Image (cartoon, rainbow, N blue to C red; front, side, top):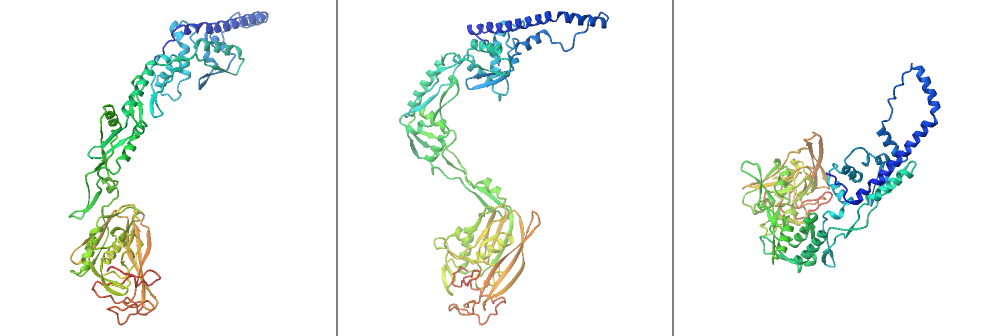
Length: 599
């Protein structure tokens, strides 16, 4: 940064008071030195005679610590004061008194007079420089230069304000400038009237001076322009749609602002208007496509994403709005922005769904009505994602099984009686999913076994469903996503769970006990080995079976078409016949033989 020399008469007046200070202080020092020389003449003569005799008439060499004349003058000039605190408007700075020597003020030596005259101003700028500035030539010092020296000669930035619904110019009309001549006098007084310690010197301010008239005129023009282009409000439309909405004059003016500095200031629209525009066009556009998982012919996981949608509004909309208002367009077309689904390609890839981590297969007799329902629920849940820490509920995902939803009547048991009901048979899907989750190491939040053991299911390790209860709810306890992928063929259903391997699970034990006189409680132990640290963890699942048509206390439940002639409690019961008819299951501690199930 180039320091500008002080201009005009006030700067020339600065030299004489400061010169006077230096002359007076120098004269005082000279008188003191002469008195010292005269008063001690005889004593020093005696000392010199002795010294001459001891040195054989040779003069003693000068001491190495002697102070050079120029340095002596600088030290003695401010010997009466330690620090001076300068205060200018709302700022202050404290400097050592030695900063105020004649040399530092440019009043001594053979320097160029123009340079000497500029020293106080440059020195004052340095004192009030921003301590956080990167360098002495920073923009902060340049701004301070304008403020301290001649603020009325530099361009100012105009401002406008919204008062009572209309814009008007808002520019500071006066500004203060430092009085350098009076400051020099105050510095002289501080140096001469303090014997030590600290002095406070207020930097005087001249009478107010007018600000930049060009900026004042520009502010008036900008206020008038802002009022004109927003008068009556505007109509806006999102490109690619027929949706048109108004923005009122009052609402629009809340977002009009200025950008640029000095005489380059111009109107702008605050980017915060994007929130208002988005709220106007909420629901307008097309939603972004979600990522879809699939399995190719080789069994590998695939991810596909539909074309992204669009919505209001692109980040350039504020500028487009300003251009449209300036051109007085009747309807201003706003650019749209991409509407990406939160469940997009990046989301899908982050789940780590890579390979099979659990699967199970059960078989059925081809050609039964129940097979239609098994295939239908498989279609509805294929590709379902359980995010890390998330849960999957069969009833929540599928809903009530209805003919409209693609289900057909099939055999099920209600109150111990075999009847046809829409959705019968889907408990086979539930049992197959239960076992796939068992071997994938997932947790079970809610499940219930059939109350009658069926040979197509693993003994003690199965589940039934009906709507609204019982339900099968699985929780993903891994840090990866889990995808459910059921498939059916002519005589079986297979459920595969895809994820990243996290845990290995296997059945490690099973035991039974008698409940009442006729029921058998089966407990199955599972051991999970975590791949990260090879630690083992065990848990259990349970099932409770009873003979068809018999309660746990041995009494008949209701009349059924098949009642075993004998059953021994505690032993595996005879399996029900392979006709697809199943009895509602029991919860722990209760016989719920009346609960319907969809076998």
